[in-house]
Length: 301
Image (cartoon, rainbow, N blue to C red):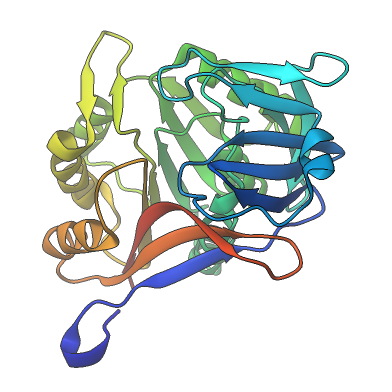
């Protein structure tokens, strides 16, 4: 992934929306989205421009997030009936959307290009192989990527430090009808788990790394992105299969550029092909792009 004079070039991965999701409008620090039949208005600091839809469209939202979205002190205000969750899905796999105190909704629509790329890589890895491909999902949250991979035939290890998130992931598994698929649900500190897997000599054909800026493990371990990410990638390097394997790193809400992730991964995986850039949502009808996060993809072919 290079531009002129051998410089890294930015790649944009854009989610255009699907039947269960659309970015309707954005601006004035907010975004208006459609999840199934529900309209949702929530904060988006990067939307610094002017809204395009009239105020009546924004006023018709079924759920509006108000308050502090970073510290978890916010709340949802509902137009009619209070909602906790709704049924959503992607690629034929069902899962729940959820209204959380952190303005999130249980999954991240902008991850759709990563899901598609992951499934392509797992499919290619599985062709002609004597065993199913193995996927490790670190900081796996509510398990959408894990379920998509399992539905495609992969053996999945899903790790998250939150018992509540693991519980939500299991509920998603039941909704998707994938209870019989090989998924290990593990509540653990991601760094400690990756280190143990290295000592065991275990390898994975794909690794997803989607860490928070700050977090705590089940035994009060502390995660700081800028301090701990280099160590995490070193551990992932050791447990990533040496051939026909991949890693997807995504970072949200950080004061960094795509170059930070690119250079760190280039140092950690000097033999691999890299793609780096931003994930973005496009407003419906081919409208503006709203950046959400940074990413780097690592391919060992």
